[in-house]
Length: 543
Image 1: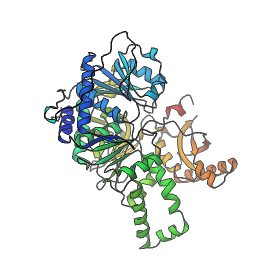
Image 2 (image 1 turned 60 degrees about the vertical axis):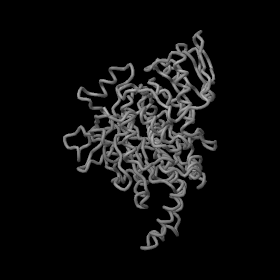
Image 3 (image 1 turned 135 degrees about the horizontal axis):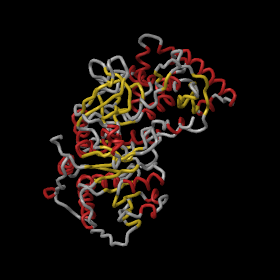
Image 4 (image 1 turned 180 degrees about the horizontal axis):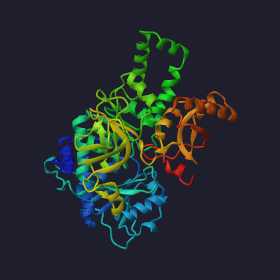
């Protein structure tokens, strides 16, 4: 158990940064740490007045916003358990999570509440608006007491309740890429371990600005765009709109954040849409081939890329899914300050990270100092095995699912991640794929579809792809890059011909047992998780 207490970290930050800006919704005015503290204490009064006890569950559904963050902080610091729900979950999933988690109160954004059925959540005490905390619905015939707003609190008198680190802080339901959603139980200790590691290793200080666009209901965005910077006194700007790359870039250039978190998809889209077309121009290619001029071109490209992200950041931390190898090599060649982290919800989420100056290409850094990591393999440096972890970050288990918990965590406390990889003699981890995704070649060879997809995604007219097994044969499902298709004015038959050229070129680059027999075009982008991993089970089940 860590000596640092999570709620104490919140309390100290509020007191130490009393008049500094804390939160703002994008394009709106900010509120300071004093106002955050006052709103937290008001919510504590709301809980007390309605007999919410420590350990009770409070559900929270909405896009990133100031009030979302305040409800989260108030619930966890009260000793109750927050149940954050991803805003892109369908109504059936929301009803299931509300009921399965035994939540007593439910804060929900007005627009999302319209899609829900009150009768499906009848055990709740009350449903409250996340916009103004007014009552949406009272399923039970009981009075709900709404306390008066707190007009002022003194800095010297501000205190939060004492909540031990071994208490449960959150139950996080994630759809993952395997279908059925489970409730990951994270103790205060897991969240504190992530926050303390970030404080020691990620360069931020009080007053620094951040943009929060990763879903806060997902552990990646919650830990590193919200909880960690909040404990340092940073100013966090929340993007509540659907964060397209265009909107995100606009926010970066307005806010000029000091640290940026991203999923690979955002970086890869910027590379493919803004950088790669310029690099492919004949004049640019010629200059890149000439000693001396190549450095001039690379410096200009690097400067342009820095400007895209606000040109005020220490580094970009990329996580949530694998980064395309071509894009990573390009960033590394530019000496662009990026790094790649690795984690999972069950670790709250961080497993490994190294700063950008230390990171080895192709790796996801070294294990964090609060975890042990090993490869379940006879030769961890050369033979792929499952990555297993143990330590302070590990979840308590899956809520009301002892069988799944025992399958995930063994008697010695080792959590099976389901990810496959190797680890070098310096401790850098290299991920090869998911154990559930691994396919077998004709003679039993291991095929990691993610590696093949990374190659195919770099080929002309390919936006994204998925390798599936069809009766022992490998088929590539491809969603085309319709921007380039339209720019080249390709007909449907010409696009099919281009994909056949891609298939032949890919087969020449890969081992003989990794032979793609067909490329099949799909009409829509693949369904994805919040960290933009493709939901593979939707395209492989029943095939």
